Length: 243
Image (cartoon, rainbow, N blue to C red; front, side, top):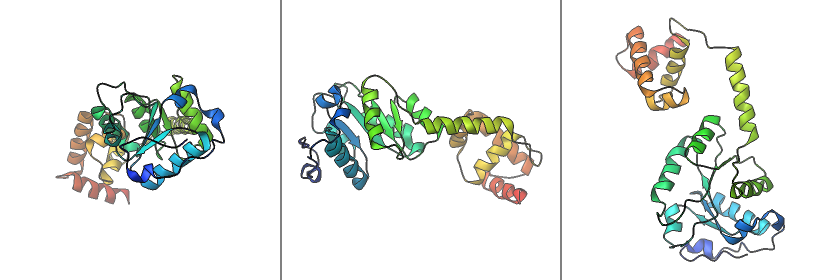
């Protein structure tokens, strides 16, 4: 099946993705009727996956670097799915950006996030923002296509490996709680470790499941205990204490 969507960049239009579909049994009725929009700024990655989905599974894929590229084609019907490639820590911002520019005249299609970050917090964040799937690059292509069909049918796909790893980490945390160090509580010790690598209060709050205002209070108390004038001094003094 040849990609024939006007308005997409010429390099995609001229690419020869049309080959007999070796695994057409994977293609649902909905994926036969409407295309998939594959959103990835990395040209090589975008083109390789497009070719694999089109030639191997007979899917209709529109590869774009920015969602505006698809919007400018003036489509009157939403795609079956949007595949969004993004780094895990940027998932909220990228989904928000996608939703903010989506045409109000069109229904919002299911969004599946592709990311090399399998941190369970980022997965949950993506789902809370409305994503219906989260796929890691280690996922076999057959499973990816089955995940598309699952989402089309109303389901949600997340990698089992991420859930297992999160459970294992949770069990280890419960069995080995962080101990206070140098007069600091376990929570303050965790915040100090984040400060040492230059993370902001907002990011610390997100990663430690805290309110940003609570982090600010802890940072002030840490500065008082260390007699530090700013966050840079906190990081420096904390590094000396860790030696």
